[in-house]
Length: 335
Image (cartoon, rainbow, N blue to C red; front, side, top):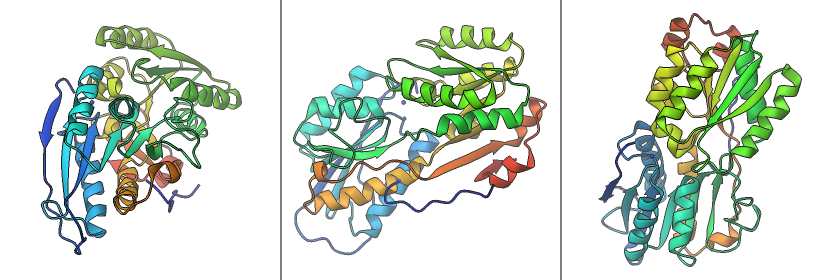
């Protein structure tokens, strides 16, 4: 199995942070007045992944000729996993009269659409925008929002395949998520259930809504032989990833994560959508909207670029070895 490389049309922490930042860009002249973009984040601005996402967006804008302080101004707000602050910051951004809003994740998009049905919205990292009622359909979303989704049905099978390659004896796999921040979790669970049929694995849900629930659930799972874990990315789990990783290590549970933030923080392995690529593509859509395109006529793009990241240090601590197939196909290996 060769390393996947795709070329595609496309691509919150304890405290909330508010900021308004102009970013220096150097590019060709864009005629007309100063344009304004509001950025509504659910990952804290100080998080390494947020930095990568922001840099990817700004670099792509740079390439298309948008200069902060000259022809475009960016306002940033980050509300982590606090829904009330997300709504407050969305309203605050709309009060600044932006030309468009870039909204991160389901909570960010929900807050942005509550704040406006007229200002264009580009969303990133949102699962099932049709099923959640954000857009009419993928090909022609209608309304004031379009963007980039996270879900691809085969992902569940891939997560189980990785677990099975690491621990051939695995028989039972927990699926952890926060119901409030991930109302779309059923899609992923069905994907996992479908894949489990071919592996003879029993999957089950682990909904968590506080830190004590995370600790209890992982303690219970760690006492079960031949068990594994899949952790869904949502605003709750991402901001408590250190707790999850520590408890997984304590109970020596083989775990697959759905975003690279986890192995970068000490988790075992991740397979999921390339977030930074989605922000690059969001910048392309931003350019089109600033030049007159209507968001409702720009198709919602599904993911086609994924990345596999392995953490060798964590594998050794768990007494595991990555098979040559995984090592050969990994996009990045942390030594």
